Length: 242
Image (cartoon, rainbow, N blue to C red):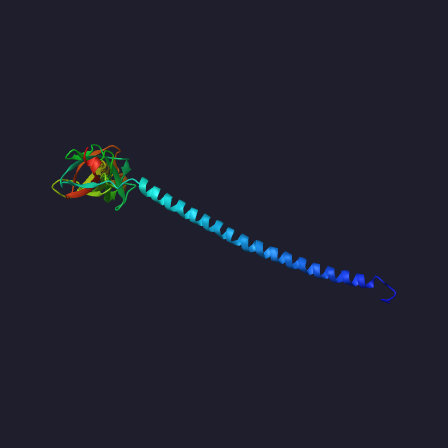
């Protein structure tokens, strides 16, 4: 058959040449791809490394800037509030012995700021706290209600809680208010009704159900209290130099 086709040899040679060229083309593509990969990867790594270094430099610079701009901690000095220092206070709101119980807190505030050596150590309207020790509503037979409390503390300008006393010499240490008693009125009515209505004297006992008034601490009621013990507070030098 090869003898009958004079071009068979030429065709075979061209097929071999095409296979060789195709293999070389594949090898050339592979070589070019590998070369590009080798060239591209270092550039990418360098770019990423440069970005990381730039971010780190920015973070360090921001930290240094914040440290440079942070306000310095002000110097402070100690100021002593002597024991026995008086405070003028008033009740913040109205309360009744009917609504209170032992252990409840009462709120007052300072009317006149306290200054030591020209420095304000307790501001006007500073919170003053007291604790209820007895709370009784008005009772039968005209007994008056009663509300008593002990002073607890006042908040100084540096937020120190300064202990207080109700009286400078100590005493009972309690402030209090009482309601109006109707005991005399009830006793008189009982006697009158008992004499006039002897057959029905139990009716006279009904007058004993009249209660006395509850004790009321009105808003704005004023007291003078005293610092219990010597107390040291700390104030910025700028403020203490006022």
